[in-house]
Structures are given as C-alpha cells and as structure tokens.
Length: 254
Image (cartoon, rainbow, N blue to C red; front, side, top):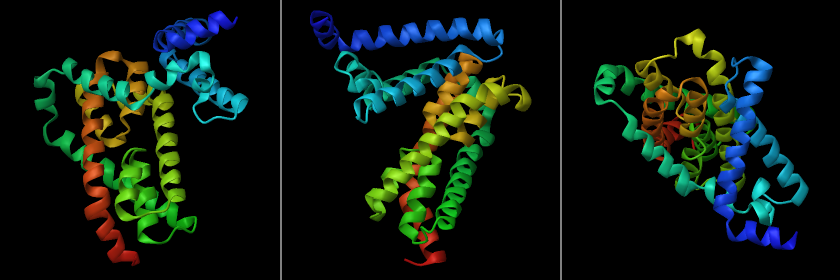
C-alpha cells in the first residue's frame, strides 16, 4: 500500500486525470441509466465532484477537498488556476468569427447588463445582512458577479479578509447554480445556438459555471459562452473597484 501511495504521489497529475476520467465515465452511465439522458453526465459529474470534495475536506480537516489526501494531491494542480485559465483560453480556438459578428451589440450589452445586475443584487443582499459600508457592499456585489472579481475589487478598495471570503463564497454558489441549472433551463430559454450561448455567457459571467453548464447542454456551444463570460470577468475587474465602487460610495457614503 505504501508503494502504491508513493506511485500516486509521484504521478499526481496523471492520477488526477485518471480519476476525473473515471468520474466522467461513471456520470455518463448514471445519466443514461437514471435520467435517460435528460440530465447530462457533465452535470452529474459536477455534483459528484462537489460531494467528493466536501467529503475529502471533512475527512482530512483540510481546505482542498480530495487534494488533501497525498495520493490525490495532483487534483490541486489540475483544478488550479493555471489549467483552468489554459482551458478557458483554449476554448477560444473553437469559435467561428462569423457567429461572433452575428451577436453584434447584443453580446456586448449582455456583458454590461450581466455585471451591473449581479453587482446591484449582491450589494443589496450585503446591505440586508448588515454590510452597509461602500467597500463591503462593492466587494460582495463584485463577488456576486464572479468569485474572481470579488477578491480583485475587495483588495483594491481595502475590504476586510472576512468580506473578501464572503465575496468568494457568493461567486462559488453562483458558479455551481449555473453549472447545474443550465442544462435544465436550456430548452425553456432557447439556449441551442451560438448567438444565445454568447448572450447567456455575457449575462451569467461565471466562466467556469457557464462552460460547465454549456458542456452539459451542448459542448459545441462552450466556446461562445466561455468567450463572453471571460469578457464579463474582465469588465467586472475593470468596473468593480473603479466606477461601480465610486458610484456606490457616493450613494451610501464611505
């Protein structure tokens, strides 16, 4: 057993890919057996992954889920920012420029509206729970946009570590809801073509959530939704600690 664990530790990334591959295979079979394909295997894999991550953290008392087990330490690299950002950039190579042109102003407007609506909603919820200063409201509002924009904004405006943590939590909840909910609501909102995928990515904004949700809906739509969602993150990082924070401060004071 010690030898096996040692081999796993020395080949952590390979073990991570094998584990995720096995989880995807199991999820695909569960999708066919339990839902007859109505709930995509990707969505089931996301849910199983969250359960395993929770169990791993609870069993070890750590903060990295299954990666807290030495044998599965490669998951921290596979699920880290480097490979995540690489995957996001790589999706752009599957984009048809003609489809982007067809989105036109609607795609750009969806990004702007998505950031503003999420920021306002998050700020209102923050105020309702007693975080009434501009820095805290802006940070949690930005976190409601994405869990990346929240810490960027919080650091820039001098928010406390507690508030920054809350902004990350808000963004993660949004990401999970979008991942799991997208394949369920896709037939109801006509999410079946590149144009609507770009609008959806711009409105939702959470790149990981949009990419995972679209992968569970129709993998051909992933590049389009991921592209506008990535723009959303950039716009949020630009507006959150600047225009939106200044506007919020003018309304509620320092």
